[in-house]
Image 1 (cartoon, rainbow, N blue to C red):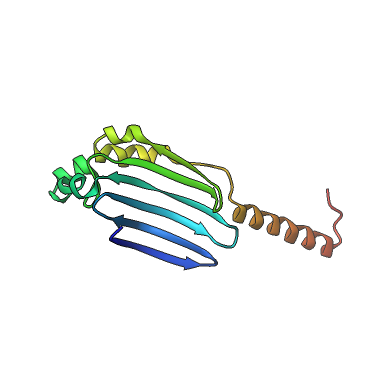
Image 2 (image 1 turned 120 degrees about the vertical axis):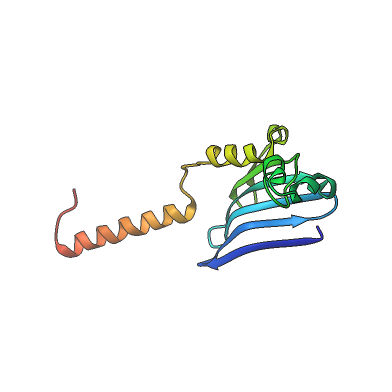
Length: 146
């Protein structure tokens, strides 16, 4: 890659990437998601753009670039990907069939398709802390548990 740009935030050991992109002449990627360093979890998604230098030329044309490529800096032929799970061994899903869809449809189908309801390790830890705090409040109040 020749360059990487992204808006990001870092809070409570979670680095969140917003509208990230890495570009080179042979490949480009976009990235959105987070890396939770405290719980060693990752949830990232975006597009992989092969032959980025040539593939992204049409994306620079107003309106036509949005329809065919999905927006400035994306490619006409791009596969979508999603990475979730532990940092050491994430589950990686790539949808090469999306490479055949015009960019605007990749964005629409990508927005509809995501939705993993499995709680993260951080969410499970927060739920456990809340349950322990509630149990401590009940025991301090002298109310017998159910």
